Image 1 (cartoon, rainbow, N blue to C red):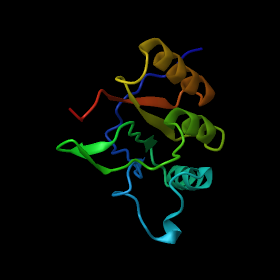
Image 2 (tube, rainbow, N blue to C red):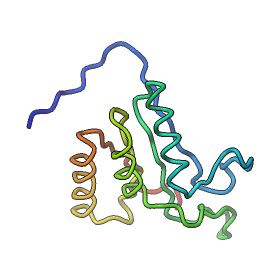
Image 3 (cartoon, helix red, strand yellow):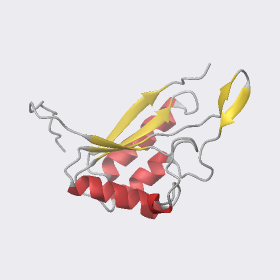
Image 4 (cartoon, rainbow, N blue to C red):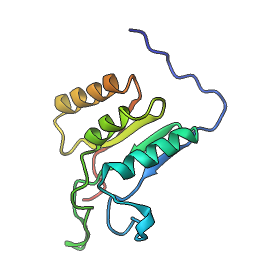
Length: 137
């Protein structure tokens, strides 16, 4: 199997960031949809793909946000694992890139490489990794 190497085209490419990582950043309006149901993810990814966006980026927060040792914003409870969600989205999209934040603090490198490689195969080469160690001391 051969892969094309990305060559800059001189055109701007946009990606969509499905925020919702914590309760302070999600929309409260009912029409915003759920931050945990597959239907919300599918709708946004397919809409972005129709709009010719280059990537669907799913951030992931695996920690409590805190200030001075006290939690102040909890991550959305019940949000699916980023790579699991992107694998499901690979089945209902054709061209949009699928990007996951995967924290190297909480993932074994060999396991993470295997899961990213699996997503890449399942998606036909559309997987990408947003590398994060941590932003919280």
